Image (tube, rainbow, N blue to C red; front, side):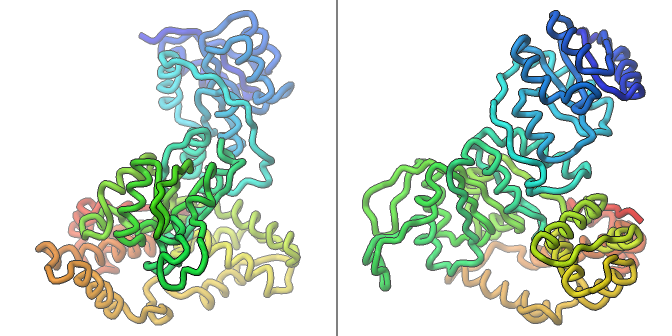
Length: 479
């Protein structure tokens, strides 16, 4: 049976009652108050084995109180609750020395489990830095999916762990990488980003590691690479799945040895950078196809962080839209408001381009229309005329789907030189096409598997089997 005295501070009587009952059932001895002054008196008198406190209380903000509590009781575990569910709340809670941050509403079973872990875990000392103003935060949203991201980021801020950020295009992977840098212990160093897909393959090694004069034709002067530019800071390797194999080998050595040589150089250079990588590709599939080194993957994938697509966090759309409207207004575009029906229409769209597509739409609405209010009909008009269908390949720069597959297979076979790829190619290619096809059908039908099966022309049981075998996530959309 669990034991321990738990101090609870929250100005909401209903929350105090619920927490009292749940903790008492678990075997703890809870004691609750509705103000910070009483909590401080209890703590300063040596009472309580653990504190659960809301952030905003009538007489004092918990983030002002926690440092005092930590000073007199450095080993006292503190769990912070808050309805102000922003990235800043999670960061500030971590840097004040809180054991855990829980956004409201929270799961009672999770809270009780956290209390048990906190009482049995050694306590670490707080970190003194508090990050900048909430209005400057790069990440917007209060959905459960984003709360998980905020909590993970808060834990990672003061570490140098290598992070692998995955997610669809347009989900904000570089914003997350910048947040890890800007609010972390390397914030005084440089944040240097390099997009592997945007640089010719033959130049990637030179861009990463630099080159010496005369290293190759056209190398007239010494070139400083991104590793040297990022010394003491953070290097963000975007679209890591597009890195050629030769550069992968050199990057692996840097991660293993902490040093590198410039192209054409002979002297090894020590490096001190934090690596954050990102990709929208399935790297495990890339490994199976021989396009990505497995040993490099495990060096980069120390902390995997998957960003949710916009269709997984539709409840964040109102906050995102208002943020983008404010940003557009700061840039000189007319001030706009948006009616609630228009926001609901945006929630019913499948957003193949994710947050980037939403931002572009909002900026377009702010720039092109004279009316002060964005209406549902205006949204309907824009979605119908300005956004190509997710199934429409006529606007693709790469041509139709058959041509794209043909080009991909040509490059795939070329990668094996005079040899042949492993057997089973037919099934592998089918799975590559089937996975995004089923995902798109589920998105278009708001996660309704019966309608998706009809759309695909499959038996419902067959679709369920393919979802299970392909580990395809089904996201239900709000109406």
